Length: 230
Image 1 (cartoon, one colour):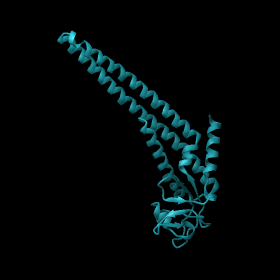
Image 2 (cartoon, helix red, strand yellow):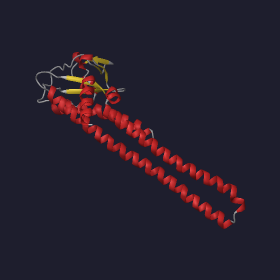
Image 3 (cartoon, helix red, strand yellow):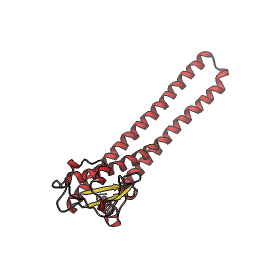
Image 4 (cartoon, helix red, strand yellow):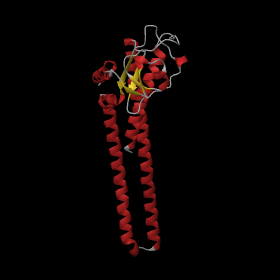
């Protein structure tokens, strides 16, 4: 059951990566000429020749993250590209921490409940084994049937607790996505960002200039909004 937390973290990290790229595609106001160079600062993107500086290349960094050139809308003023560290955002966002802690407490409570019921059943089985020689065949058969029903109840409890944790995980995931979506959409419009990239372990964004990193600002804004709404 604890693996659900790892799945949640991975899903949210991937969500940040693809959603922030999606923002850039949707928000830019007009098509950029196909032969125009792209400048975005000195972020380093994985490209054809190992790694390439974005401010010295053309469309290769968009190709590397799977964005079709004919679907990209660009402003004539030049691209404004920033990025966030998704791992740092998830680790330090207070709302996510509270969601994670809630899931941990829920998982621990479910695990304890299941262990308690399993221990009771195991004790009853041991008691039956000790008394089996003194019991008639009918008594022993009835006792065994009763234990089998209790065993099935424990299995059903395990399945129900697992399903309940999964449902809660999905609900918390939707709540988190809604908050992050709303914030970055508003930020991109307010600051006229064309792309907000997401850096995380295994992403195509290998390195970026500190001047383009808005993780600290995003955390400050998100945490302030969360504290104000508590």
